[in-house]
Amino acid sequence: MYSKEKIGLLFNHYVDSGDDKVFGELMEAIDPIIDIVLKKYQKYERHFDDVKQLVKLKMWKNQRNPKKLGRYRKSPTTYMFYLVRSYVSIAYEKILKIYDDNEKVSVSIRSEKWMRGNQ
Image (cartoon, rainbow, N blue to C red):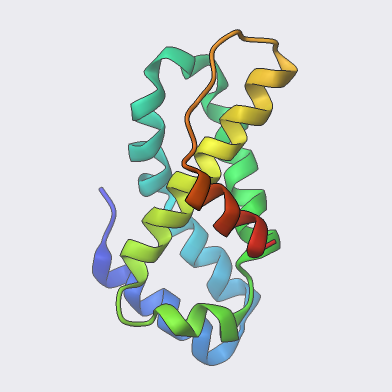
């Protein structure tokens, strides 16, 4: 289970310091959130490890910006959950295209536009 308190402390410490080590600890702290979101995709369980890795890469690439994250100090766990959910959906879209699985994972248009705007 994830700890809102730990995520909040690490999130705020990262926003204040910009320390990549702290960001790494934050990524470890949100690991259970990624697992929770992945459970909604049981049908594609064979891709869990790949999706988890893609989500973490996206987080490192797109969210490692203390100024941008500073806007979400009020509710960092909710923001992390939202990001993870969005990145998981996008990662499954990519993976299912690679493996030519015939089913699509739904991603809301608003979420998809938001993700493109934050890349």
